Amino acid sequence: MTFKPKIYFTSNVFSPEQIGSNEKISPEIRKKISYLWQELNEIAELKVFDGRFPTNEQLKSEFKEFRPNFIGCHLSHPITLEMIKNLELYAICTSTAGFNHIERSKIDDILLTHTPGVLHKTVADYTIAVIMANLRNLIDLHQYVWDGHWTPRDKWDLDQSLCSTIDKKIVGIVGLGEIGKELVKRLYPWGLRILYYDIQQQKDFEREFPNIEFKENLEDIFKQADIVSIHVPLNKHTEKMVNRNLLMLMKKDALLVNTARGPIVDMEALLDLLEKKEIQVNISFDVFPIEPIDENTLIRLKNIKKERPEIRMVLIPHNASADADTRGKMDVIFLEDLINLARSKKLEDLERVHLIPQHRRELKERKWKIEEYWKKCSQ
Image 1 (cartoon, one colour):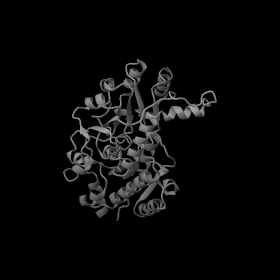
Image 2 (tube, helix red, strand yellow):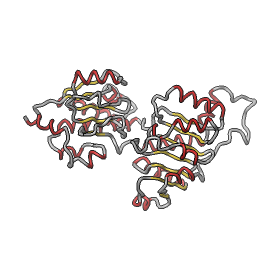
Image 3 (cartoon, helix red, strand yellow):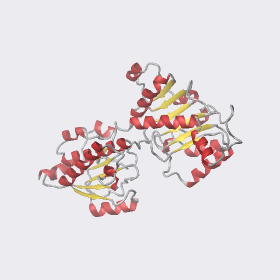
């Protein structure tokens, strides 16, 4: 390789000294991360941001100075068109399944990669955990003990702290992709009635799990389900998809679960309906429209809980994929994609790279900026 590419990492978390040294991750994965970094250092000029969460201005400044050809980032590092303007940038790799934090131009000729097929099990596992925590009111009960309210005068009684089990609940899954399917696989043996909505019916999957029911209209999920779990990507079609009208359809004491992306739920509509007591819906949210959750939203949620203590809330700081080995595997896929991009010489070399679905579909139909890189490498 005559031309040595420049690769910029927007966080030091990807490095062998950070996630690669975390003892919660298996030794095999840590060793793999170290090996991949050695290879990257051999084939490219690297620069790593000294910290976890750079500001937009810091990234813009460092991009301008370093002028990367490839960028590695994750969800906490939004990449805007303004940041990458006038760069000889060929690809952006994100160590996440979603990629809505990367702004794309109308030309959309910069390749994007992500890390699919690795976090569906841990997110499905986590989704069940937050469902069960909400149904059994575990958060409030933990707080009850923690705050010292469980005293000899308040031991145990038949009707104290009544909640409900998942038995006979109707589960509605919105989006039957990798995570939605994994959730079905885990819940199916429990004998629950499972409804699902997707842009198309998954007939092959239904043959494997014949008792699940496809609903062509999203409204039917919100009308019929006791638990509605969101598993769709965030895009222009799904932003605020869970709107006032759908929320109004939910059963009394139904549970809304969001482990996908915050803006999919119209939070303003949800808060307004809860404040006005127009709905009685419990929530388990791992994601929020603004992250970290903004102060005003948190205050409103606290006030709703104070006024309506019967409403159960489980609020988690975007942590669904935080299984140690899952995060380690995501880093491995991410680093391997950067290596394969840097070593690539032609379109066929990109077959092994985890391109986002649209770019994979259109790979051989469009002109990509990385072709300029291949010309430089061949000179």
